[in-house]
Amino acid sequence: MYNEFANIYDLVMRDTPYDAWVSYYKAVFEKFHKNPKLILDLGCGTGNITERMAGEGYDMIGLDSSVTMLSRAREKNSEILYLNMDMTDFELYGTVDAIVSALDCVNYIQEDIDKLFALVYNYLNPGGLFIFDINSAYKLRSLFGNETLVCDEEDFYYVWENELEDDFCHFYISFFMKEEDGRYVRCDEWQTQRIYTVEELKTAAERAGLSVVGVYDSLTFLPPEENSERIFFVVEKK
Image (cartoon, rainbow, N blue to C red; front, side):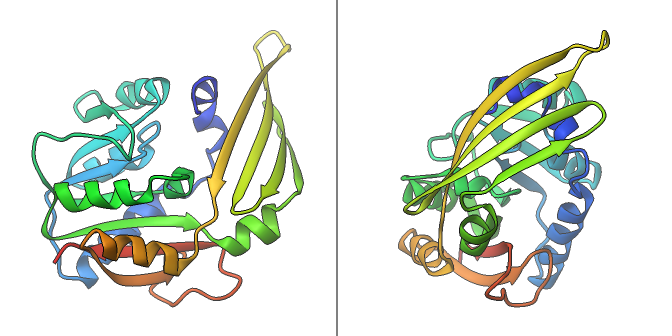
């Protein structure tokens, strides 16, 4: 996942409000009276949030399973420590003050959610927060569902086909990127997201000894609604 696609990821995701994620993390820290110094970014991708957090004065570690995504991240900021490991199977040299995971990375964990929370518990300092967001069950079932999406931009074109299968949503994406000579180069990507309920994730966090101290609608401190598309979780190691 995210191998060939890494080369065009930033182009396709250029309208993503990364600054809003960073501002929200800072607001969460303030709300819960935390002042983290060292932060781990799980599923950091090409480092768009990691480097912004570093720019805010945090010491950052970025972790991702895609070598090509991390290569792009290192091009942006070679001073950040980037680790090529899986979110459900990683090792750090020590503990961190906070952990973040943005843009529905947790949905990509299909079977090993308990391993994720166990590792978070292991590497998070007491009192530290784990902040992550998911695509909601409503979004994946009702908006993505079995739909086909088409995007036609000046410099790229893609067809995004979705397929629901029980608690999983499969994505089949074909990108066509415009080269300087006018030719289009095709890149195919296949992904799967797990559909999680709020209760499933709360229970999994609690099994690991963590406490869910907040569940919010996207980038707010309001409770999620039935048709919320993105849900944020704030988890604390007591």
